[in-house]
Length: 241
Image: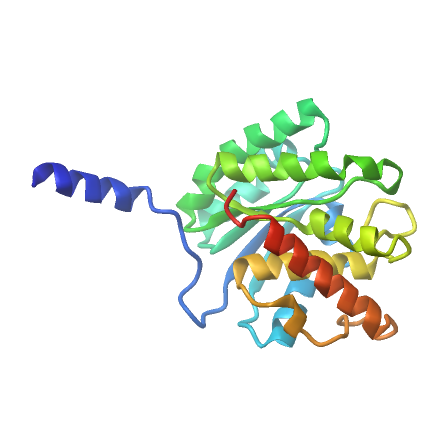
């Protein structure tokens, strides 16, 4: 009996946070760089939640130009916000991290942040980004890098970059890249927001309206193609690798 009680206590102590109570607005902390704050991805997540009739998340961003997770750890703001407040999900992002040394770096610093994230009551979410337009062959390496980091900490994999890859495979002319060939255009930010929101507050992307918040000129057919790409990436990539 004592052994059973011990095991039950151990399981409880190691339980993974499972998000907010049903119907409650999730609290999301975004930790990243310009791939998060260009076009204000957290605000887009809020807008898509409102479109979907989901509880609108409370979001906060800690983002600096060209920062990797290692830089965030050294700078300290992200660590302090995890220590000062309770969160449901902490969304982590750095560069594409496709090269072997960068993949190792992403895992190392995800592992460093994971205890702080769970101490704040949250799940770590690895927000897969994308390679630059002139390195599109690196999409699979970027996917594996972020998926492996999520797996290493028992976190959630948000395959935004995989949704980009699917959308571009369907229509190479779709405008997910911005003019610099790396940062997202509004359609790219929308696609990332749909994937992230579906991971933290699951729903079918194809139930969304065929409009992108604050971008009414994007054709409905393009929006539908983006939603299909999000649905495909979410279907093919497990939330918990």
